Length: 101
Image (tube, rainbow, N blue to C red; front, side):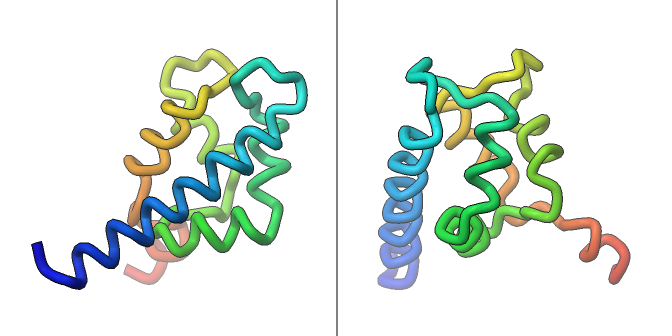
């Protein structure tokens, strides 16, 4: 594994740790899950927007992003599902990217 890959992995882990902290803070009812409202609220915070942007996660529509992450359509996501969803949407073209193509 080259140095650039190691740096990218370290940065990803750092971003994921930040997201874990924010996720736990956003879980206002202590359920261990985040609903769409809680999710959209945290996506509007500067620190989360920056972290997700650095990870290549499109943020133009946080409700749509939640729906993608909530693949079981339960209306809630737990932290592992949140992280898996974030990993899955990294680098997905945004609407703007699609229009430019």
